[in-house]
Image (cartoon, one colour):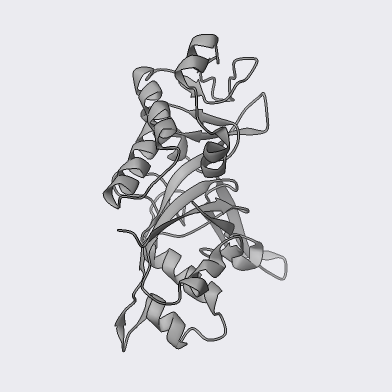
Length: 269
């Protein structure tokens, strides 16, 4: 489909897009997750609502907004907005403050999505190389960058160093494109290890005080800042210039805006 546009979301602050389900664990408010991978996600309805409010917060009933997003009286919108899917997430390290981690499953899903809609990527071959190399080395973390030393993070994960043979195998056309997509200092770990990491997102204690006394203590799961997502939009024939106002702007997604959650910047891929 020629009218598909792809966008990346970079979390500037912690993000909480709640799943709305009752929780009987220690975490009261959990984030939305993909039903298959259990990776953090941003459901289409949540993303659509945030973008609708951002594009015209004073008049969400304007004809342009109705055309893009739809209206209960006039039917569905002419723009089809896909959910925000995970690209990379920060992982702490004893060598640097953090590295950005991804896994072959994420890369495969991203490539499958672009192939389905025949979306052209100049660096598709580079992504195929990363996925192929990681799948051939399932018990190691692959450093997709030229580091001088091996890296071990605080979970004692063994990391394979960037030696000459690896450099030849991962000879990318454009590091810049990969950095724009995933962020700098990317590591690619096996699917199982990555799943274990994202299963335990940061949890923050929240409290409601009345005259200095606690009235309600609860725990909230967050997606950490510097996490990256992508989403696709099949655009209608009109008002694409209005929709493109989301690009290179700070958009608030999810809840808790008053305490600085969910501020993201969106870039066209």
